[in-house]
Image (cartoon, rainbow over all chains, first blue to last red; front, side, top):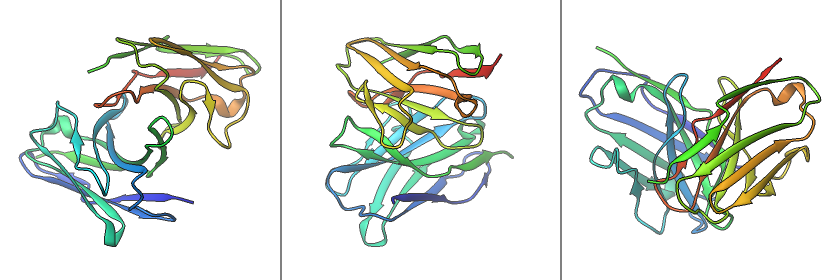
Length: 121
Length: 107
């Protein structure tokens, strides 16, 4: 069964760069049928899509974050990563990685447990 | 971006009730509409994809309908484990966007 797990620092200062990694197990990251997504959720609020990548197609990003976001994939180590530059308190959220099934309505069918990132001076 | 609007934002219901949640897209998304359930402190889980297909392992009391711009999630007989927040999501075109959520609470 596919499992995803986020890792990375939980506390950042304003203007720093957020770096998170999602490790994929129980399946292949290299299948062209899947996209690998990052989504975030501020406390008590809704879900915001950050972007996605596949091993065969370049990344796409939410225009609201595009100038600050980079998503990359390391297929050999079965992981993909998120970098978000110049963070502010508004970037404080639980960050999720998720697999998207491109063969079936682009549903997000496997999620990591989420990792809380807090931006505070 | 495609805006997704859910109604209501919250509702109170009893075990055994039939519950209906609506989701409207700001433009046609064909049937590219997915529903997720999220419990406190947990990641969302997909319930319905393609507007009406039941995800493997999800109880049959959950169903989805609609196409174009208007969609509905129905729970036919609410169970204690169904008290949660539900989100719709359009997967027609990026950026993927979610509704604001509907919190289903115990009456």
